[in-house]
View (cartoon, rainbow, N blue to C red):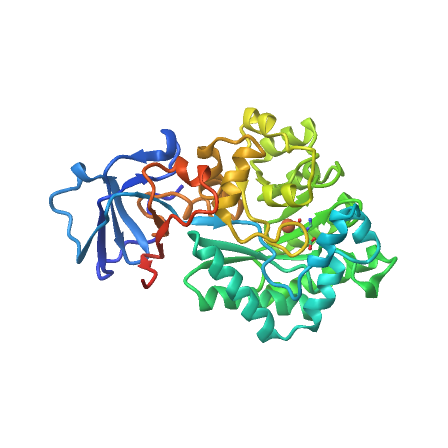
Length: 414
Ligand code: NIG
Ligand code: FE
């Protein structure tokens, strides 16, 4: 890991933040805790972190900000979202409450495909406006980095449109955005009954999206209502040829062996994982793939099968947590509620949950060396919380403890 990821710049303004304790989330001690800490930013990077009593006497700052107690943590990283889409699926929610299952609705042509129709019908402006609103809601709870997937366009034109909207969200807001191309999300109506032809089409489109700079990673939905592990393998081979990292929605509704296949491609993450087998756990451990757990979808689909958190922990697989914001299986915009649910539903510890939205979420985006911890040389993304201890972030739900969000050294305007 480079000690100085962002280069030091003598002319960058230096701001000293003090008066709060720090949950740096650096590995080594619980929470990376520093009681009564201080943090120096130099432009967009962190230049010094430590106890206030250990501040070097010769340390120069242009500005000093005295915080009224509380805790600083790394900015939250929501590393799995489907933020760009048209319409909503409230009617489908009602149908599920009356007994229809997610699979049944999907097989009847609803589910993802109904959002595809609404997304294709929406203008670029409409897609951007709704995505910006959703991103701002996430930011109000401390999110500074956001992954946004495509997956509701399912044609060369409409997937590219959604990826461009995702890029514009990152340009318009003080937020780091990483995109994932999720064309292999569902079979579009034009390819009904021809899944292999659709996979072939994706292989044709991907290099052009990549050439336009739209793709940071390639994702897919490996499931019996979506694509098989061998179909996803063809997409991953194409990603590999372009030098793009991969990730996979795997083992959400059944065990299709997606995780073991993705591990062979050193996937950044495998996501959902309720039906992950012991062999799948070992495969993730061996490949260093992050297990991305999504308690919002587990809760909203009223899933009964828990992801194997104990086995993942024992095998040393890094676990991340995200909102999975999407209109069908997880229409939440509350990362803090996800921290709570990671503990109450998945029995993770509050510290594991916060690591899941900071250090491990960064790793799931390929940003493990530059984001997700408060340490020298990393991007200065952090949040000031009105709490005495970071365990309160997972303990409370429905609260608004975010006092201030700082992205790349710049605090949000009050
Ligand atoms: O992450 N699992 C597949 N994709 C989404 C759901 C998409 C939808 O229902 O619109 C998920 O849960
Ligand atoms: Fe998802």
